[in-house]
Image (tube, rainbow, N blue to C red; front, side, top):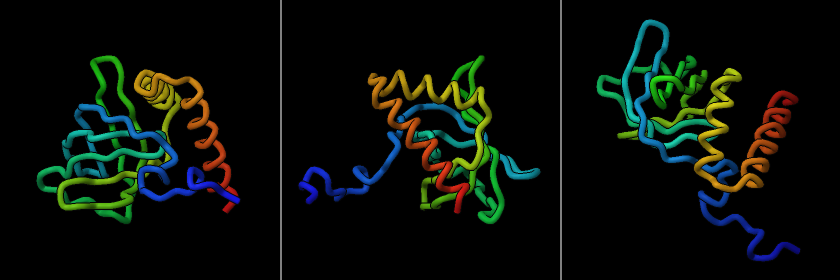
Length: 135
């Protein structure tokens, strides 16, 4: 029988991946359209950004998201909109290249400060991806 510690009661507890708050610029592209926004947080499964001025994205098509960390490092991912609020956009990561995944891993590792927690997240990411591909 599950204990009260095992039950998931809040949205944060149900979240499988730690969100890393990070102040960075974000370039959002869709076809010929392009917007600039601010990153609010990022995880292995997606990103939360401010809603850009003049936002007119087509939610039925994917976006290319690029987070500029510094002059040498960025994180690029193909993403779809998971939710749109009045001031924010929630993107779900659909695909990420190896360099971006490595950079994000390092960012998460530095922010979590716990190698075991990082390994758990990476294992969940792989198992989630395997479940998604078998559906």
